[in-house]
Amino acid sequence: MERLITIYWRDIPSRVVGRRGRKSLVKRTLDARFDRAIERASRRAGGGSSKKYLEDWRRESQPCSSDLELAVAEQVADLEGQFPPDFLERVVRAAGIVPKEEG
Image (cartoon, rainbow, N blue to C red):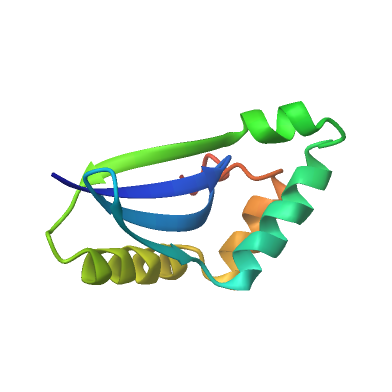
């Protein structure tokens, strides 16, 4: 069964993995602005503790089509579209959490 796994730090997406079974996978990292946003948001959140920082990572998994390359590319494009720069900046200011009025 094919799965699409999106990896987040708090509410900020970082990468997408398409997986078929245990060995077949496709990985894509979102645009570098997402990694920079995670770094900035973690500092705002008081990320002095590496344990706390690591605890805030999570995965969401969903079924996907058998074309892993396409499924991953579409998910990356969708996530990047959901987080335009101004919105991503608001999420950073909220320490990595999508503000309630926008969630």
